[in-house]
Length: 197
Image (cartoon, rainbow, N blue to C red; front, side, top):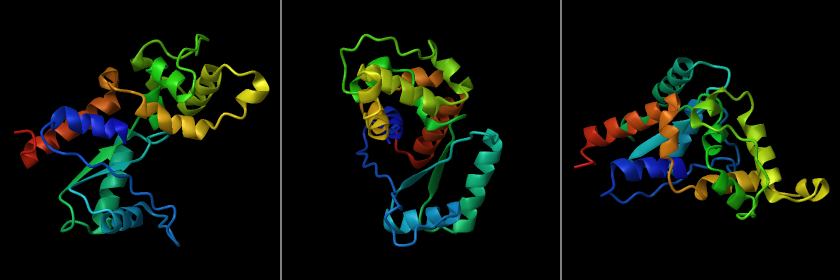
């Protein structure tokens, strides 16, 4: 959410933004298929703009985009929302969090840590990592600078959620193809809706 909110603030700075994540996990019977998730999200969380996230992982970007577009068509939400933006990182979203060492240290609860985190030195290198989630988890545990036994007690999932909240500027991600595609789609949507005037 912080990445998407930052992008919107860059391209529609004069409009108030109220970002919400459609968390369907607590429903009695959460939908399993993407089209059901989309339909339920629109009903429970009405919006002007819907971002649909799917990591590319082993599929190609085009395959994931086609999958999302088909699910949107199958969900039959045309009258309920006019704009949908696909968010498809090349690997996993966690890759987009690996560029900011300070944010990782802060999310781990040790902002003044000094231990090397062994992260890619250029943002453009993160899309080629085979396991960005594992890299981020190891970096957070290392950033905590606990001994091996106490390091296991770090709530890594909670720390992962905190990393983007600790990042103020996502512009280094502009060198990544998937992020550039996402930003271009946000710009195009803002222009077509007249939000950036």
